[in-house]
Image (cartoon, rainbow, N blue to C red; front, side):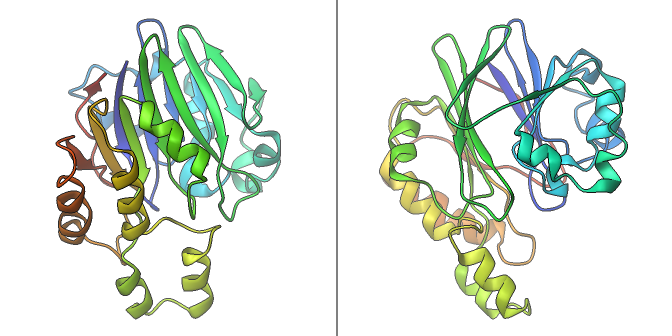
Length: 258
């Protein structure tokens, strides 16, 4: 299995996954033109996409879905409640969409790629984390959630790669100029995981099976690369030598293979 984060953060999200026979995108939060520019050196052709998977209906995950649907023959995998709650300005452009509604705690198969849906806690009508499986290779993806249930913590001990939210530093958030109700929403179980929560999870799960960890959905205003390097990556590396990197908002990662 190969994968590449194309965008990660509140300005748009997109993940590319490729197996021997399948090519899929998770979330469509940036434009086709921008996405194409970011992967021009990576042998990724969006015309070949078999499926588009949507984690939830917030605009930074679906904003450019109509463009990608028109460009490809991809089937869109999305929860029905999420689909019904996509903003009208976006949904009104989704003509003749080939859609498959997905539910929590189910397995779906796209050619040789198995996908397991895990319900997360976020201020959306619905939100999924995912386990992607090809043969013995397993990739876990968890962003846009206030916390991870203990049963999911156990699951991600047994994956080869992990993409996990590391959204904000609590002190930076509380000292920011954001309204008090927004701060409370972000800090709630329906918000976003902080650096501190992310580190707690990493310290609980990291082991020799993990080949790569990507820290995702960093806040531009209430976090920094330096803080994440010091407070999360450096601390996690004290217990495990797994490479830990940051998924960027404005540039694609390299292609990882597991």
